[in-house]
Amino acid sequence: MIPLTRFRRKALPLAAVLALASVTGSGRAASGDAASSSGRAAQSGSAVASGGNSAPPTAVTKPPAQAVTKPAVTKPSPPTPANLEALPASAYTGILGKKIIGPDGKELGLVVDVVVDAQGGPHAAVIDFGGFLGVGSRKIAVDWRLLKLTPGAPDWKISLNISRDEIQGAPEFKPDAASGQMVGPPPQGPPSHDVDR
Figure: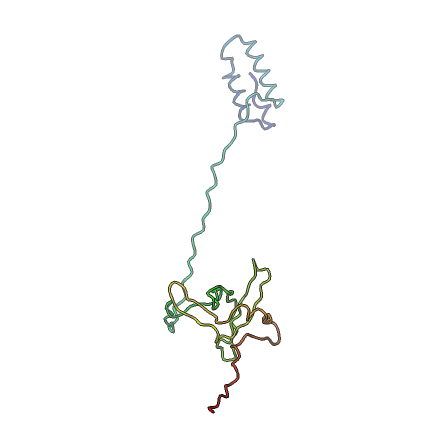
């Protein structure tokens, strides 16, 4: 029999302690003669004492960690303003990004900005007369009065009664410039001076 007291100073794996206990039994060998039993116990004890272990240590598995979910925080919705007015889609439309159609029915460009006057009213529409994939595109300001908006479902039609050739030579609109130019209405012809003879 191997006394367990000499192994208390070293930490032994659980498998080594169990192997030692099964070999020694209750102080006598489970089968065979006492000499071979004590020999096996001595070999087992020396293997345990030297740290040798034939059985792999048992892995301790931890349960998977639960995902911590925070409760959803709902913010109270702000109060509805008392001064709301109706804005029906059939009566109004946004024009940024809308196509401008020329007198020949072909697309001239897209509205990219609206220039307002000191009173806040629209004064000019900035139209991007784009090239291919933005290459060669030019932004030109056109007098707001030249645009004709025609309501319709699902989209409004915005037309301009000036051809591309008439606009092509206009200077490019630069919003950060001190002053700029816009394409206005076509000039009126001189008044006729027909006199009956």
